[in-house]
Amino acid sequence: MPSKSFIVNINHKIRPFNKVIEVDSDKSISIRCFLIGAISQNISRAKNVLESEDVYSAIECLKKLGVKIKKNKKKDYTIYGKGLGSLFAKKNTVLNFGNSGTLARLLIGILSTTDNIELKIRGDHSLNRRSMRKLINLMSEFGATFLPKNKFQFPLKMISTELPIAINYRAGVSAQLKSAVILAGLNSYGTTTIIENEKSRDHTENILKLISNAIKIRKDKKKFILIEGKKTLNPLNIKVPGDPSSAAFFVALTLLNENSLLKINNVGLNPTRTGFYRILKKGGASINFFKMKKENNENVGNILVRSSKLKPLKVSKKYYVNSTDEYPILFVIAGLTKGVSTFNGISDLVNKESNRIKEMQNVLRQVGIKSFSFKDKLKIYGRGMIDASNKKIIVPNLGDHRICMSSFILAILTGAKTKIRNFDTVYTSSPSFLEIIRNLGAKFEIQK
Ligand code: S3P
Image 1: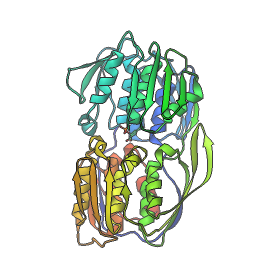
Image 2: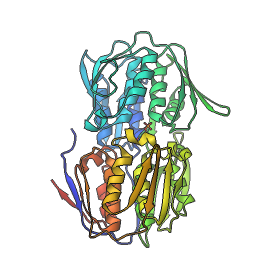
Image 3: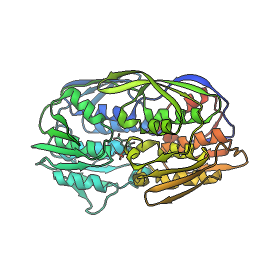
């Protein structure tokens, strides 16, 4: 059940802090554990999973498709796998993906090549406005049908193919599309071949490598992912690390707040996810990774971050794919760092939970930070740290968790009197955000 809607009001600046925290578990890996566990043989186990709205949507959808999932204790689940090609629900059952693009695209990947599927598919108001055109075109290549024809937004009807045949695909910046093709390929006849033009997050590949020889990765100049269809998947047993995208908000806060220091333990530091940290280090940030280890094919470690004097950020296109979710908070950092920051190659942000370029420009404008966007580029005229206690920020209901959290950080750094509507959307990815930020000393009020 989605949590009840509430507003967060902020009217205080945060003071210096020196703390050790852990952040919520990784959303991408948690959703993948449930989806892949469901199509694996036998009994899988996922520990330290994220208990957030997006993950609950994944569990609900899988239950509708006949998968048994048991909660053992907090963050610890058993998934009774049905095996490849065995998910099923009565004709015209409605699957609701909630706010989650990842769940939508990956599960549609699985279902497109599962025999005998005819379902209604939809999401919440934010997901229903996002384009599924690229996904629909790809899944149509496998043989699936989406109705009505030429409509590319939910709600839709999907009908799977009875004869799924492997495809060839040149993957771009989207890990969701790449993963959807990988998962569709698992139950197709023949070998699905993906050439990766961009190195997007590789959690799907990392999990599959642990449990099957259906996946082969070849590295030449480019990465090739080969998926041999109709091979079994063994059960998985995974412990999920902390989410580097959830950690990013606290890292940004520490860098910009004066005299502050923060240690964040047990964070996933897969290099396909740490573009944000590389961008900031290049801009002079004091951020260090330590106690690095490998767990279930994923890098995990601790982060130490200190208040830093930053240079304006010059973020070229090549960073996009490894910092996809961090642009809203990067825009806040740019706005509070003196000088002109530029972000290139960011056009995909318009199809996220909201149009993140436009919406963050709206937020920054309210505290007098100018920005200018053209084609796939954004320029932000950073003012340095400002006192905005005479200004107001209002964030409308966009259904975008990262806009809410970025605006929150901007508010407690500048003192702007801020009202963030439907803050409950933050529970899609980071249910502990308010508790952690309170522990760091932030003051706020919840209005129901
Ligand atoms: C995700 C991939 C990214 C990211 C999203 C999670 C994933 O989306 O923005 O939050 O888990 O694969 P795209 O692949 O559409 O860029």
